[in-house]
Image (cartoon, rainbow, N blue to C red):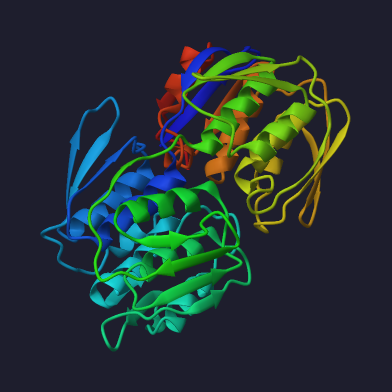
Length: 426
């Protein structure tokens, strides 16, 4: 198992290129199943979750050919699609595997899939996915951690579905299924994340008719069939936010290439409040941080609110802020597991339910810490960058689910970081 060894006290300087968005790539790759035609997708991030999904697709007989390694294009060939039950072992490795359920029911009228896995950041019920598909005519039962579903007449029907919470995954799953359903589907209280808009754009390029993506109400007019897509995955907005946090905590000056800040307004606003400056030009954005971080109060919320996926990163910055900060986690109930590890580095954090109180200190101290999930990994790395001395970050396999060769990008920005294999890590 790998770990990072990081020598703290650096100041980030230089240029960095952001990889394609994991949260956009996964549903878009799954959406290619809805057509028998070939699809070509570019800027796919080379991540563990993506590789696991590709394995599931290939188990269905789908061929995935890679070309143009610089832009990481994939040619997806669906002509030999043949349904088989997805591997339980692979499905349980990542949350997004549940997104295969809707497209399978829409395409072939049946599916059997294990309840999905992923980061242990709280309860992640799939009820909204199942309830929505049931309203569209699917018969669904759960036995021994297996979801078994079929459509009695072979084709889903349009329905009006109101989510009790704007779930990104449920919105994506039902939206994809509705593209091949009979009639029109209306999704109310739908998620508004940029990844929803991007998925809708990709689906519309296949011949779907989706109206209102990015708003709370989405209308999908079902089609008899879809063609293949041509799509380039957008840069990962959470990776952008992570590098903003890294520049902030080190007082750095970095240029993030080929990105815009349109989908990062809540991130930008809050990092400006704590002392980060942004200059945008046609080639990207320059992030220039002050030496002193200011305290702030933050509440995570579904988009367009401050993303829960950036909570750990900004918390690390606030550990060395001037004053007391408060973070209220409103999305996942178990997403403060990184706080204990940060206290090992000298942070002063107390938690009370979904509220974290962070008393800023002058400095953190290098220590040996364990990552509990994907974004916690990034948060601990951010803390280590500013810490006095050397830190060891264990269990970085979590990080590889969402960041492409992060250590290489950090080396280019002047960070003393080394990935090593440690067989003694438990």
